[in-house]
Image 1: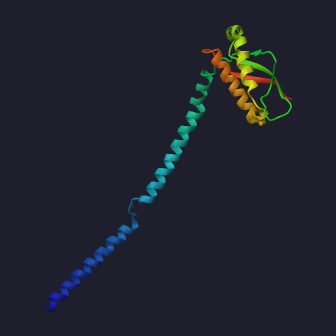
Image 2: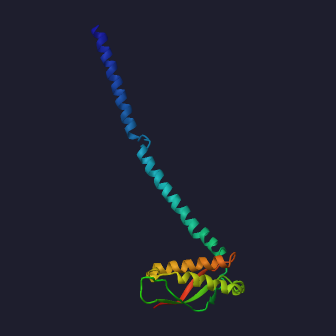
Image 3: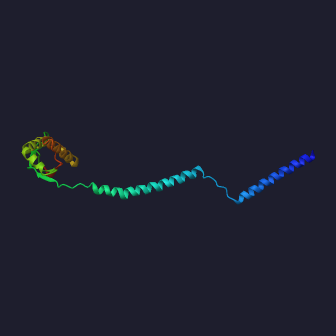
Length: 178
């Protein structure tokens, strides 16, 4: 039995030596390891940035330039029409003296055909302006916000008068409040 134990121990020793020999032989050759999940994510992100940047540069440099050249419309010159000077007294019931508003207006039109449409209705336009301006108080014209509101209201009134046509803008040449 002692011989059997000794034989078993010898067999185990031979097996261990064989395993060590295989490891030593394998140690000479490098084993291929799969990259970790973090490394795969980093590599994938870097590839995505490089490919996305290249595609974006291509579209920006080559595609964008062709669209801009083909979409430039011909610029039409604007037409400006001077309206007669308007002088009105402002509504101010608490003041003991009257205040006046003197205003020179220019209309900005899209084309010359609009002048022909506006000329016949000029008395209506001037009436709409006079009616609105007489109801203003001096405080309504304070600051740039007051002038902006005045400009927008005059534009709205003239566009309702000449509908379906419309003016692009009402421009002030002169505004005097006395």
